Structures are given as C-alpha cells and as structure tokens.
Image (cartoon, rainbow, N blue to C red):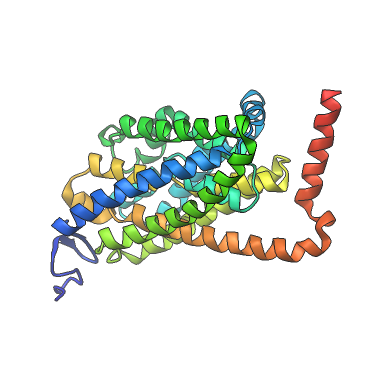
Length: 340
C-alpha cells in the first residue's frame, strides 16, 4: 500500500509528492549484472562507430575545429543557460534547480554517436565532438556550475567526479580508436562490424530506458514541474543546437549531428555527481530528474529518427534535390579543388 503522501510503502524518504525507494537486494544484483552487460555492449557499439570514422577526416575536424566550436557553444553555452531559464520560469525549489543545471552542464553522451549514424550525420564530427566535450568538461563543468548555481547553493559543495569523467573518456577513446584502425586497414570488414554495431546500439538504447524504469521504481512520484522540465529540456537542446549550427552555415547533415550532440547529455554522470554531492534528504527532491531526462531525451530522439526515416524514404523520389546531397556534393568538389 501507499502512504498518505502518495509515496510507495517501501519508500524510506518522503516529502510531499517526492520519494526515494530503498534499494532491494534484487535491485543491487540487477544493477551489477546490467551495468556489466551495458559496459560490454557500449564498448562494442563505440568500436563499431569507430569503424565508420576515417582518420583523415577526424583529424581534419581537430585541425579546423569550426564544427567542434559550434558544438562547444551549444554544449556549454546553450544547455546550461536553457537549464537556468527553465528553473527560473517554473520557480522550482533551489535544490531541484541545481540538478537541472548539473544536467545542463554535463558533456554529451555516447548515445548521440549512435543516433547521428542513424540520421546519416557526420560521424567524424560526432565522435570528435563527444570526445572534446568530455575532455573539456573537466574544466567547463565547474565553471558553468559556479556561474549558474551560486544564486541557489554554494558551488563548492558540488563534487565533480573527475575519475568518472576520465573513465568515460577512456571508454570512448579506446574502442573508437580501435574501430578507426580497423576501418583504415580492413575497410570491408569495418562495414560488416558497423552493421552489427548499429543493431547493438538499438539494443543498448532500449536497455538504458528499461533499466531506469526497473531500478528506480519511485522515480515517477515527483513534482509535475520536473516532469515538464524533463520533457522540454532535451527538445530545447535538439532544436537550439540544430538552429545554431544552421545559422553558423553548417550543412544539413552536420546540423543533425550537432542537434543530437547538444540534446543528448551524459545523464549517468549527472546521477553520479548528485549522489556524491548531496544528503539523502536532498536526494529526495532531485535524485530522479536524471532518470526522467534520460527517458525523455531517448524518447524524443527516437521520434526524430523515425521522422527522418520517413523523410528519407519520401525524398528518394527526388534524391538529387535533397539539401544534404547538395551539401555533400559541394564539399566533395571543394575538397577536390584543394587537392589539385
């Protein structure tokens, strides 16, 4: 039975419309098993994504980082500011505003690489953006949190798990690097691995969504304002990232890439920061927001991918008129002129 506050009977911390349910032995065991499976699956997916990256193009983005700079502005400019505006607009509690801002300050997640591949994005740009945002997060996260959270809480109380960021960076760089090497040496085998990896990527995204629902059964008993913010925030990231990239003169396929890199945040890192930084009483009001954001960001991303598939199927009738084909044709011609 549920108690009078609306929380579940096994909730250990309750306050109003929010609660935190204690971990059971089943949840602990399930968490260990699933985290192991997800880690292996993620490594396979990132290895396969690396098989679609050409070393020369990847290094080209690093040497001429205009696309990366646009992504940097979206990641550490648009997202924290959007989180701040949403927190003020919905007048949420200070501790809840902090978790929204932490999510906005996190670097891009690896799911963006999978989704960028599905929408025919620029994989070289996607992976270079994810790598750079994760690396730059070591300095930009504390800076952004200091700027935006000081009206609600002392930013010095927020613990940045640099070890987790470092592990995320290693888990990204090593498999992708191996995939790039395979693509360079054995391009035919790389295409086969890429097909397997895209299927594994779909399984990974579904698992991430399901895991949140199983492990955090009390995640849905929270204030309605956080539900709304959790839904609006990723959509704002996708939209503003796409528009800024287009304003900056990026071709359509790169705009789609920047959009996913902006809206898809590393929610696991946000959860880690929250658990390290706050007391159980404070977690009561903020712990479940990263789960909500993760669910909504993947749900809306799935809708956008489905819309793109429908657009691509319709556009095949006039394939030569598709804007992204014109962009790629223009780029290929300019690269030939540069070589000559």
